Length: 207
Image 1 (spheres, helix red, strand yellow):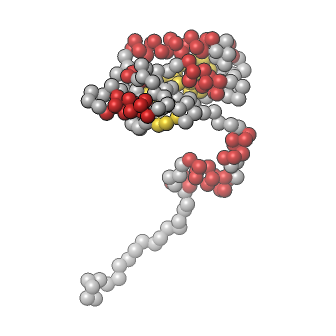
Image 2 (cartoon, helix red, strand yellow):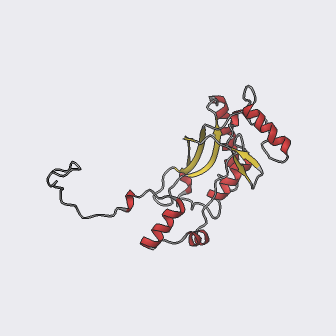
Image 3 (tube, one colour):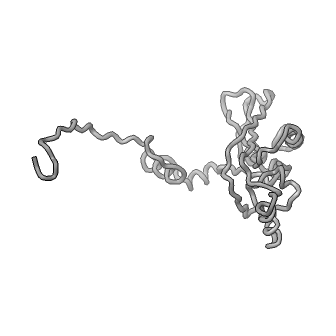
């Protein structure tokens, strides 16, 4: 026995051959795409963007409005979007679900506005940055006394897909709107009715 407390010879089980499992790696985003490109010959991001542009979802500034809805109909159901089913007469199904959101604001440079606030309490507010005064008003509405508006806790997602289709079947998102969980049935039915009217009249919708 040595002075360090080590006693005798400890037996260890025979080491097993190391097996690399790519599925066990936590890689996302561009790193994952690059790893797949090197390992299996997947196309690069630049090639994907050139050959098959990925449509971008326009998030509603506040309550879902015609501007964001029409933009998403064009992006996902327009000429460069989803191919229609072979039998378009089968119609479409509208799906509504909720997703959890990180409670933060985000600046949309293209529209010069603040995203991420609940639509229930911002539909009467001007969320465009514009001036420092407007930013201060938005900050005060979030922080001072009784909050006039809130960070979005959940997001309402609306998707549309063919009722039945074997090919070209996938859901196309047409609405993403933040809310603070105070929306009631009447609020929901009001903007969903508006959404249906827009879809019926839009050249990339039912028209």
